[in-house]
Length: 172
Image 1 (cartoon, rainbow, N blue to C red):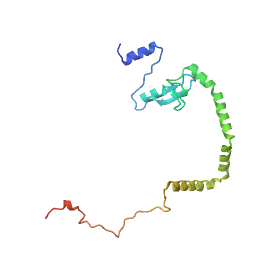
Image 2 (cartoon, rainbow, N blue to C red):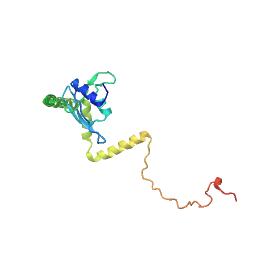
Image 3 (tube, rainbow, N blue to C red):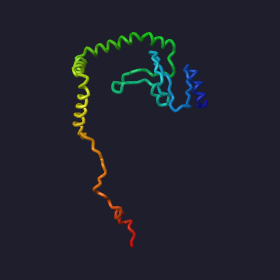
Image 4 (cartoon, rainbow, N blue to C red):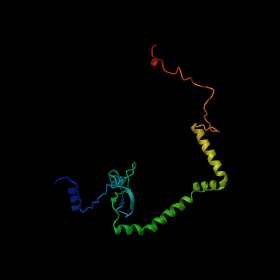
């Protein structure tokens, strides 16, 4: 058995897997991937070989080695999984809203909100400019107060003769 693309396709179909033909006429190809566990679709992701290998492998946390998500499969999700994903939309929105409410109740959020509301909008530009100047000063960058204008110095004129290097002088 040869190891050609046709043979690989036949072997994959025999195992019950789908194959997708990629159009390689365009410089950058995109395709849709889906999560086979949840049914979530990820449209317009790159379809080059490195990206396909990246997206179709499971993701693990680099430190804890905990599995973050399973591999994505190329192509749109089957109708059953898509319906499952759409049915869970309200629950995901509730979870996100609860998370946002929890953040808004934190002491840090309230402090930042009070600080931002205490500053009038007209003074905000000056405060930001002062903060940038302070950061640049800490970094050791000096910004001149007035921009320098480079004008040609008319007092110094270079003579046109005698500027050639001595090694090019012809003996005479």
